[in-house]
Length: 142
Image 1: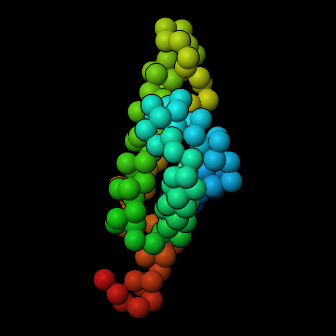
Image 2: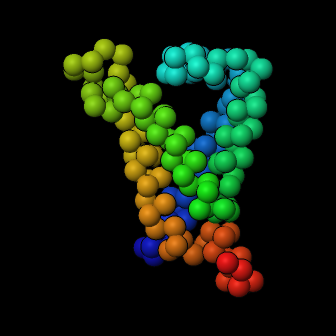
């Protein structure tokens, strides 16, 4: 497989995940509140705030999908995915719940999403299908 195509698929997948979680906060505010309460200590558990957070997360996902402003968007994505990884870290170090209670194998992929975020950042210049790259090659813009 071509590296640029693989990076594009990885970028679209990561952005799609952010978009899906953003939409969930907009259309299912109660679920967003429950996730905030359980995994983030209720830090953002304000019903009126959930849709706004969903819009921001959804826009971030769209920017990742199309590959626009990756120099700034990828680090923001990494922070979001890092927070998620930290929130479910028990499930990463003990996904089968052998030593820690309340862990869940379904949260282990948070580590993979975090690693994928690092990969798209590291190989950003080699993603030829991102809007930034296409625009630069067409216009010669920096």
